[in-house]
Length: 135
Image: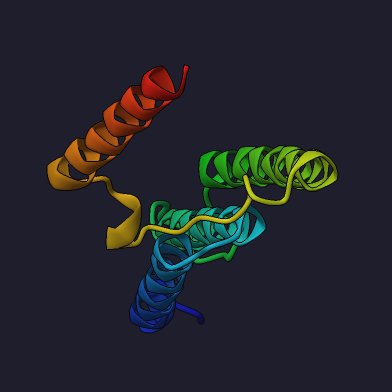
């Protein structure tokens, strides 16, 4: 007979790999839709773990032993589908309006430093002085 402890380590390893892929997809993405797919991979990982834990919770050795785990899994699937639909529609609306909003860039050049802000203030003040002199 099939025992849940015989294949549980494999599902645990698979879920850890999927979790790492999902986190990597969220962290390194520069596109909104890729972040949505990274979150979808995390939700699939939750499904896999929930169902694999649900197999061993009952004394029976059947593969459909815990209806609570299956119910929660169906709820996660429904939330995942709604999230995917909303994410893709938001992505489409953002692409129609402005493409620059969708690009995520977390570079050190984008973070303004105090020196850069002071230089901008100085150039603005010099520009206003020159405009006053011209008038």
